[in-house]
Image 1 (spheres, rainbow, N blue to C red):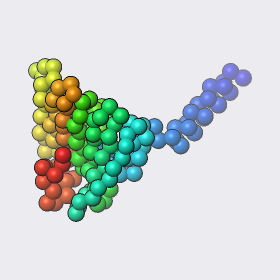
Image 2: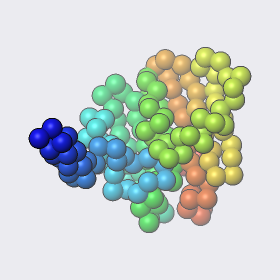
Image 3: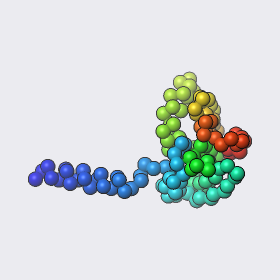
Length: 153
């Protein structure tokens, strides 16, 4: 009898996890289908705008920070930027790329010093101070042709 309860519990948890996209998010490199999950989890207001080769999904968080997720015509999030009074969760925004970012951040970095990570496959610039954080992360190989870094703000 004691084995039935743990097995039943395990089956129930597996069923819930297969239906609920709790870990899904529109992180860098992910597909566009998860933007709505981000909006709901962050309790953010969503505004969408289009450019010639990409779509910008702007999430305004309750604390005032604005996160912009740039998606290519194929639906891949190729860039994420942020600005506002609070630093967003970079683990969430960078998704699978977070570990590469974390490893590349200089060990000598102190406090709130500006961080720049420039790799062939990942570029991240982040800095600021309380009430004024800004940043940009993008995948150079995924940026649509003709899109400039200045457009990714």
